[in-house]
Picture: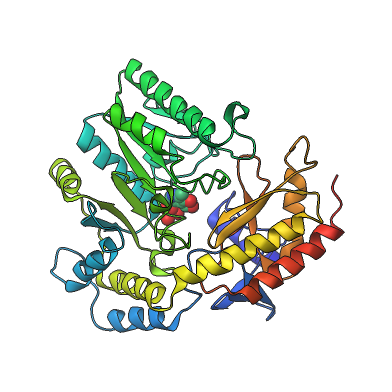
Length: 428
Ligand SMILES: Cc1ncc(COP(=O)(O)O)c(C=O)c1O
């Protein structure tokens, strides 16, 4: 079955359409934090943030079905759904964020945010980290160092080394590391000015998720924010991964880091799997964008999408899922720290709320990334019915980012399985 599906995919979708795991999983059903494959085997989902409030949450399913059975159009007709949702969404921010543009993917949201920054500054130079991913449009693809565009990068794009709290820039930790990051941004602003593009925006994930979610304290980005403001640029916070309560302590990643960005983008978990994304901005920024770009998005903000997004947001709030993320996430980190006392491969335990993991190393003294070993561990976990993955600059950071109803008992299953897998998997 798996083999024939892989062959059909290759024939119908073309080459290089990636699948997770050496032995790809053929899923047919999901419920809460569990998934089932075509043979009826159950998996614990410790990876997916799109089913934010749990796979097939009944309130979200009902909201989609009810609105789909009533009306679905686009935003050129009047409808309360989009307005009610944007009021509820912006209430999670507070001033100055009082407007939003709804679209369908995180890539679209980031693409719009780049144009907003252009409208505000009149410049086109953009800075990102050198191990990020911000999307698949022509403009956002230019920001992805892990997947270089054929023909090379635009000269209006510049990169700074991604933060790494375990192996910090210049060997220095804490605020020295923060100052080094800010100085790198400053140098790239100068370079963009010299190349004639000027500086428009710094786009970053406040949790640096794709970079390996380094352990960075609140205030760590303050020197960088000061550098950007001094240069007249804007900060775009890409909240596609940390947003919507996952961090536990705060609803948004930038709130956790203690800074106020100029523009915020979001997507993935926003409507529990229905394709909804957004750009949230102060009204003056939205006005600058709307008067410079005529923007219309056929599916963005349609009544069914807004019903799905509203139900998802209300479930997060009504079911106390942010508090659950704080509690269960702290428990997961404790259990990982305990595993680290017995498994030398765990070099560094990190995470916030229900986004946690470990940097795996060949030996703790040299901190040499255990890249191939990490891949083996992830595949062995899959064989034992626990879905997780890896990422980071060296692809050696275990990434655990489950749906928010994850429980302490679910954590126990993950950690007991990981304990057994680490014991059985020899370090090279
Ligand atoms: C940080 C970040 N931004 C943007 C995106 C793009 O979102 P989408 O796949 O919905 O276009 C991703 C997707 O993985 C992401 O991780």
